[in-house]
Length: 200
Image 1 (tube, rainbow, N blue to C red):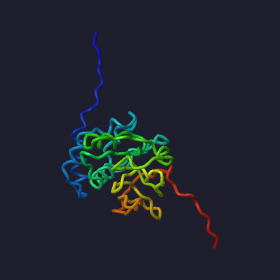
Image 2 (cartoon, helix red, strand yellow; image 1 turned 90 degrees about the vertical axis):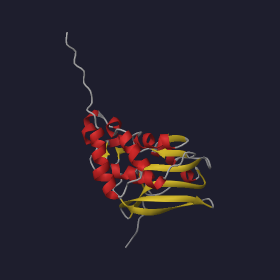
Image 3 (tube, helix red, strand yellow; image 1 turned 45 degrees about the horizontal axis):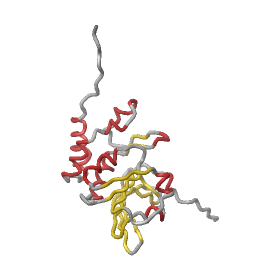
Image 4 (cartoon, one colour; image 1 turned 180 degrees about the vertical axis):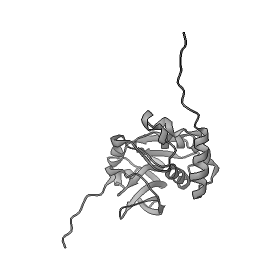
């Protein structure tokens, strides 16, 4: 009796092409970033019907489940985060565990929460680094409070309907996000600012 097994194709070449054509050409050349992005297969974080889109140069949207952002976003995010071996990291997920998988071997401790959990976060000073897998309109005070003094945050930021990569550091109890560069980033609507009405 013949049995047939189905195996996923080796996507190492696809990851190598992603690095050469999407990351290196955009200035992402640090070895720790490239090593993590070639080590983690993106298709493993997508449903079977989306796996073929794993290495395109834009986000793969997963409906209400969230997204897998473009490779360049994750490459730039890792670069700006500059994770250190003693970091305690909080990942605000965008619907997959991909970002957590990239970071976990680089840091001492990593916890992951959803965007909804992040909006309602409470507590103080637990993490030296927060990374957010998506773009936000506002940073809730409760989430900012999770950073230690001098703790860092890297996120997408929505400014005037344009998404940008942004970084911040907690100084004297305050976190100010500074845009780094314009970048296509899926928006996490759980962080939308309240709408205000203006009258002409």
